Figure 1 (tube, helix red, strand yellow):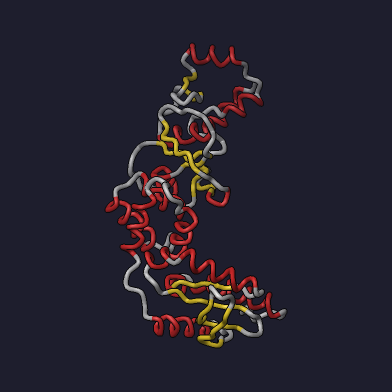
Figure 2: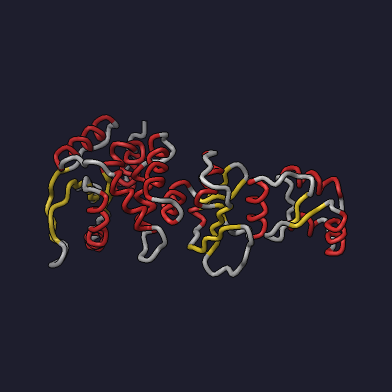
Length: 307
């Protein structure tokens, strides 16, 4: 056991004595009990050891919670606190994979699906992504407070409505705690969408400004007896459909399954469909360009100018 290495690690980790470090340093259970008995170390409610002289801060408690469940991630209000510094409450919220049967006194556990794509590292802490966090907050915030929180993050440029909507649609399973509240907030924030002609004009301006090829407009296909109709944009050389969606959020949500079925019918004909919302066209033109340029180049067998 090297006391200096242990002290250095504890100072770096807000006074927390990481279990894996103590194991590597071969600190026995008896040695740990002796240091607790002497008052040098103490055990938090969650079972993790800390240096007694270190102040009990939120960062200490969050580090200890993550040490207790290494596969978890700080979530909800705790994720917001780490990523933005905004304090909504002083609790430690930890998202853990559903099925992990652990108890952490003093920590609010949220048992849920937790794919690695929903986890990032910020300031040394594993946290849920901002978009995942904002969707999850519907379970722990009132509607008015949640709307203010989401508005603030969009206005500050930390996320966009399009990215938040995409995350919501992925997570919006029936019975998920708080999802109805988040849905209501997103519907309220969606605003007045452009008309179909306005949206087409916006998309056309984006294509011209970024030197992207112009499509054929309003083409009709008959995929099957069940799925037929007009598509917004058609690139015949690349055989790619582009659909522009200017509907309100609740309308897009209601049509989610129907739209996906239509996309799948086209895909069976070997034709992929790209869907862009008016929020993406207005808020994320670089992303729209990147997706469209990549898909058209890949499908046409040529490389489009990326300058």
